[in-house]
Image (tube, rainbow, N blue to C red; front, side, top):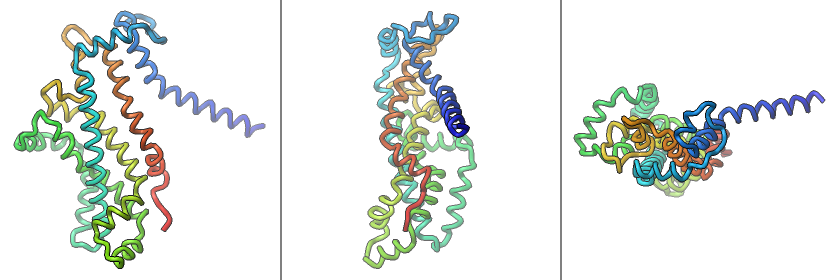
Length: 275
């Protein structure tokens, strides 16, 4: 009897905790369906309104929403794919060629760079992007950020656990090149780790606000987080439009998580395979 009571108490606690985290998302959608007057009323609305279509039309009239949404999809997807290749390939080099001169020192330098605040070198970074002629383009949001130290560390740990040295030796005896070993043997074994890194990279790029704010000047090139700031003007803030735009912008994150959820969970929980 005590075990059953404990079980139901645990379920109740989990449901209460889950509701606490889900409520802001639900309320965000509810506010997006109400008028400005209803949003600022007291008590605030807790049920969906009838202004969803009007708010959507107002949103499209103020910013090129779908173009900004596409910019976010393009930047986040491109950046995540590039991070997967760069980080896994670098980690493969660190894990495979442990006896190479400077391997350990360079790897420690990469790990140490995780501790450096991203904005510490923002001015030299901006000057470099200006020198390259990449201001007001999407390249600074895709290419430089592919050097992701945590991603290298994550994939290094995963490769060390998932790929035994005996497999390297067996492939070398069969005459496989190092790049072929990376493509045909290492990549399939570390797919759960890649799935987890893909989700984290996509999410980081999707919610990035500071770098687009510094780099982009043209409204048509804005990503979603930056474009939604244009809904705040001297005449006021379109709260309903911001809530509606944010509600739509979280959908790609859910889709990305659903597509890679199996690999994401495996990557976070297992981290190794049997040799």
